Length: 263
Ligand code: ADP
Image (cartoon, rainbow, N blue to C red; front, side, top):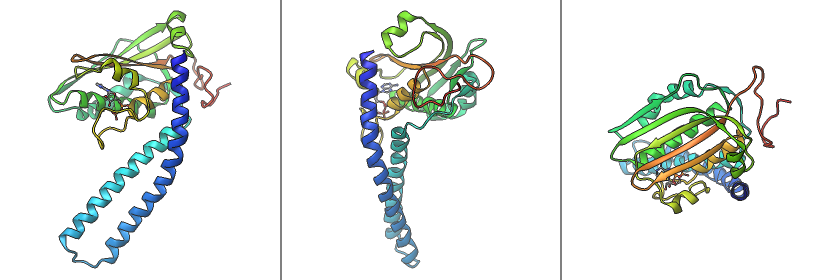
């Protein structure tokens, strides 16, 4: 429970800081991209090839930076979720092609489902981006190929389990397990993996935001996320999302301030 509180405070602090920086940065990048465009329009054609290449390279870099600041803004805003009853198996099936294309050439995707997976209460867009992020991490962990398995399972979490985590209601959840046969993570990496900006990847490849965003998303939907990993064997990230009860407007679990309330 203390860990969860520490993590929440850390996310809050980093969120505020990055929000401010990302906002200013975004304005500067708009200036840079606008300036590049003006150069392109004002230097008459035909331009030397070199000039076009430099312009192109600068534009691509500035656009990548803009993409990063967008992600930072989304992270820091902790935009309120659009929670609805969601069919997780269907959402995963719809993403199958995209997920398969994310993996290295000789990696396989395996999707396993049970008969009657419960509907869950979540934001479908956020869940999609969480799964895509997990697939990207899996690809990075198995560049030579391997197997990515996505499995859904109805689970009951009892008070004994939820109390150890803190701020999680006992009850029914759907567990989405995303497992790879990649490098795995050391104890030290597992401990830091949810920290914003923690990455072991080279600059330009990793932002260290994937898992921290997934953590924030899971908690905000009244769920939970957990990492099981063994070095040299592989990693499973398990996302628990609360079962949807009822029929009308989505009922919103837990006491998260940021969630719209149905009552
Ligand atoms: P990023 O992928 O940009 O580094 P993440 O927050 O998604 O950011 O992950 C943080 C770190 O956790 C990664 O740099 C990597 O060291 C480790 N990690 C995440 N997923 C996996 C995985 N499936 N296998 C091995 N290591 C992983």
